[in-house]
Length: 561
Image (cartoon, rainbow, N blue to C red; front, side, top):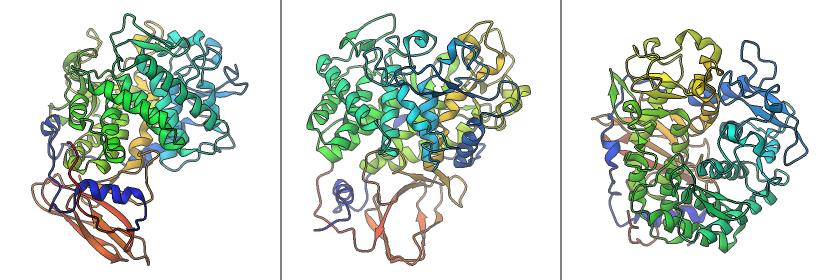
């Protein structure tokens, strides 16, 4: 049999065409969320991402605390300038005149480049500047670590995350880099850097040998370390993501071996090891590697670890649920216990990156991920001062300073400042910036540039249909190094009655559309689009291809979870 790509055969085999419908698997935490969150207001996330890019990447922006970017000419690691991006508005540690202009974070810079790229902006030539190539400066060759890090040099590392204080800060910039490399495969030197990072991570996994129970890893000395920070065993998910991406890119079987080793270490944990951003990548890799490599990782276990809020090291870290004073905040990601709950915009954006494409490989989670995303997408507007009622935010009088594109860092059930903003009722939009430099950082540093920078993740995957509350989620958008030639979308109906939406197909081109959940063709040889009826509280996953390119293979046994 001939197929348009291995991916189509893979997905059809996973679903097992002998069945009438893919049985859906619930995620307990998602069951606690509203079917239809209220008040419902899905903003245009692509528009927000485009506006963030045009507003923030403007060296001539006027107003107090603006512009939010500057040029760092210190030439750390590579003798070239690198753009600096503020972590928070007004952060006194940053800017060209502070700390030699060296303090800026990869989390902000890489997040902004990736987000812009996902909504169609070429950041390798934006206003004549190659912002992509500048990211090389975060590759810390001067220190001998030879991986991407959150800062360019140790002189400023203790001002923010990285350099052995906090393991996820060392791992996540490499996850971001590999995503950006997927978007810019021809960027000079990126292949060399990607291979070097993969080698470092492979060596580290070999040293760790199945035991990730450490606070961080010294990639220069190749030694696992412990310090005052509790163990971060979910770093294994980050290692696995980088190594599996490297395997898909370069084909070196050692990288696949390392990814499997890291995933086994993660799965072997007896308690929930979630710490910050990495566990959702473990769930995604479990689903994808099971499908592509025939492994048998426990997807459901890792999804529960992601959502449940049962983490021990980072106590209560997971996905929040609830309606606070008539406002649904369910679906946002952060601490489920800090001051009754404290979620963060960047964590919410970045959880969608791996969890949405997971459905391609495990369509049994279409309902759960569809419902979670509706809640997360709806609630995430509340981080922005223009969408949160003034009575529920700490600085409504300073909203103009955000120019409509910078959000508060987080949303809490009660002010985490204890003696400040205590009259505000839940939910409270706020941020931690003033705590980073007590007496130094202004109040407006509660507005998070680095969190807002990741808006393109939503912008690249989320679109509302003509029926309010029914989203079109692009399962290819963040499935980096995947087989993404065929448009694949998730639609979830949050209503207790059937709803019908219009599905478009390319004009004057015969198209077949297959529903991975219903396990049937919705249309064949279609050239004009069609109406799709969604059952109550049910999802559809549609994959489109040129007519007659999808064949019907023999059924295969269902994979674990």
